[in-house]
Length: 301
Image (cartoon, rainbow, N blue to C red; front, side):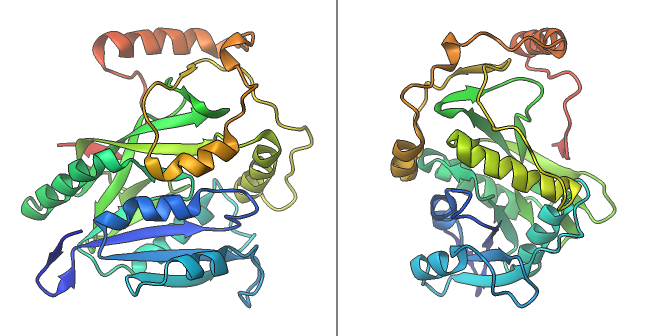
């Protein structure tokens, strides 16, 4: 954490809805950015306009994060806002609007930062403070799939995204909150750093994943959209064993979600025509570092 002059340098921004019932690692997510932040805005979503209906997430977080640096908000998730997941960017922007810091550190409810990367992020923030041209920092992504023992790396999942931004320059969360843009939709000028986002959104038990998929379908396609089939993990293209270390703060969550009998590598590969294109693209990326057709919300400087 760094404070310059009398005001905060870094504001954490975070939103969540149904964190308990969908089993997000919300406490771990917030704690993982706490060492970087002078304040953290925690925006908890409710299902009704009177802000009474949630699954206990608000009370859980209020009971854990009691220091004055944690600023709590309640917000109504309007079911009418269901185009391409834009309610997610709306909720991010509600948190962003309350941030006082010159820099904002963003984290989503299924994302966690590794303690080994805090110094790299800290140095990146200091570099931003000294260089006004840098509008954001780009993080590498590790997408877990099936359990915390497997990751998926291929062109069909994003490999990097902006998670630290400069505040008060018109930056807004974009579309489904994957990244950020300026208010005129122009891309941010960003610096890539050697820090990782551990994304656990697809590492939960299958019955919880079914609930999550139904919830996300409603966010993207409306309240009447449901998933009829039960969710089952399959061996998809790009899945491989994870051979690094997890953030220490995730130890207990991982114990609860590790499926001892899930052996994705022994399953038959799910054959799809698009895998041929992914194989070619991934081969080029492996040899050159260039990802064909990569979607980017940023310009690297």
